[in-house]
Image 1 (cartoon, chains in turn green, cyan):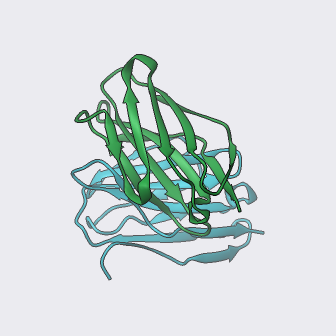
Image 2 (image 1 turned 90 degrees about the vertical axis):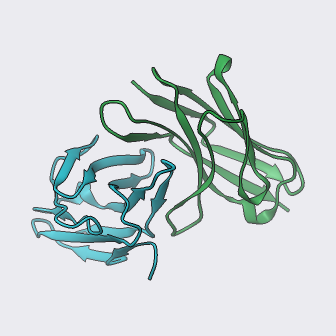
Amino acid sequence: AQSVTQLGSHVSVSEGALVLLRCNYSSSVPPYLFWYVQYPNQGLQLLLKYTSAATLVKGINGFEAEFKKSETSFHLTKPSAHMSDAAEYFCAVTSNTGGFKTIFGAGTRLFVKA
Amino acid sequence: DAGITQSPRYKITETGRQVTLMCHQTWSHSYMFWYRQDLGHGLRLIYYSAAADITDKGEVPDGYVVSRSKTENFPLTLESATRSQTSVYFCASTGQGWEQFFGPGTRLTVL
């Protein structure tokens, strides 16, 4: 069975500071991992994805994530937060065994202080 | 318009009424999904479809019905709406890269 845990439902950083959003997963098969972002009153948008190629994945808006199999983690980072990064972020894991399903984490709301 | 669209964007209905939420995608993606998003529960899968005429239950299917007679459309019906079905509903589709493309959502209020 797959599962996703996002540590911290709320994260607050100052503008220009490092952003670190944590995600741990469990999967019985090699996973496909994703980070999505949701702005108010919108649907989710893909930030980046890991599909068993490079373990360091670069996404849009300066975000990146590193797949660490030994730690079953896929943390999202950005070196310098911008006010426009304030949103909710979802980690997700997908596999194609027993039907195509994606499991989403509970989400982490990022606040950026001026 | 290209992409994935949902209608209506906002809907208010009363307990016991039937409501249908529409979802349309222009990519010819095989897989389509319906989720509901509620505070404290994140995104929960209601139903999904692997292709036209192939649907399967997700995590919270009770009280919902889906159909998929055409690849591009995946309507979700609440047969007899209840207050617990007040939520934001998202439709999504998946292409070859396995990432999901989401519609803008439908905010449903059941009085």
